[in-house]
Image (cartoon, rainbow, N blue to C red):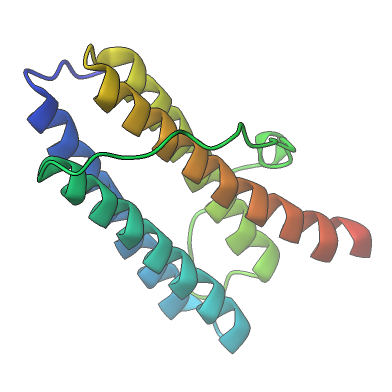
Length: 151
């Protein structure tokens, strides 16, 4: 893990990662043929932009509330093979890509929380980790409902 010289650098890094995640979901949405799939990924791009806005707010001095409860992890994505985003990917493949992306974001924020000394910043990183866990759970539930029940 990269060592950060200040809380400001951690926030800048996290803001950049949220922008990258939003861009990723927008690109994924563009690759989807089905309108419903486009909407799902556009919605997730908006969620990532909300995270970015939250980080920018903290950067400007805004305080955050308490961390939400721990999110259940179905671990469905943990047992699936990696899939590369492609224009002709199936809904199943798109869900796998999204689950893996959210798992990586969850791990990143947990690692950032462990890397900082400032308690408020640590709480922010843990809060964002829980947000990413919620996203992963939403994709896992969709996968369970639409893919696993069909097989």
